[in-house]
Length: 156
View (tube, rainbow, N blue to C red):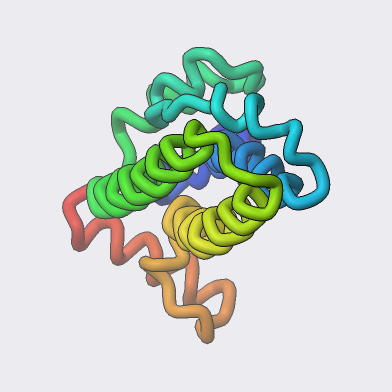
C-alpha cells in the first residue's frame, strides 16, 4: 500500500515533500533572468513534513501523515536535520532578498542559494528512499534483505 502511494515502505517517507524545496530552488535559479520573481520567493514559508502534507493536494496525504508518525527513526531524524539546514539557508536568503538587492546581486544570491540547496535536497531524497541504509553496490535481492535487516536492527 505504501509503495503504491509513492511512500518508501522501509523508511515510510515520501519524496513528494521535497517539492516544497524544489519549487523555491527553481525560482531562485530563475532570478538571474527574471528578478521579478523575488516577491514570489519572499512568499515562501518553511513547512514541516506533516504540515506540508496537511496542506498538499497529494492523493495519499493522509497515509503520508500516518506513515510519518511511524517513520524509521534514524531516517526521520536525519531528514529533520536536513530540513532544518535547508530552512536556515532559505531564511538567510529571504532576509538578504528583503534588502532590495540589485539585479546582479539577486542573480548571484539565487545562484548561490540554489547551489547550496540542491545537494541537500538530493541527500534528503536518498534518506527518504532508504539509500543511507543500503549500500549501492548490492544486488536487488541482497539489497532488499539488507534494508529489512537494517530496519529491524534499528528497532523500527
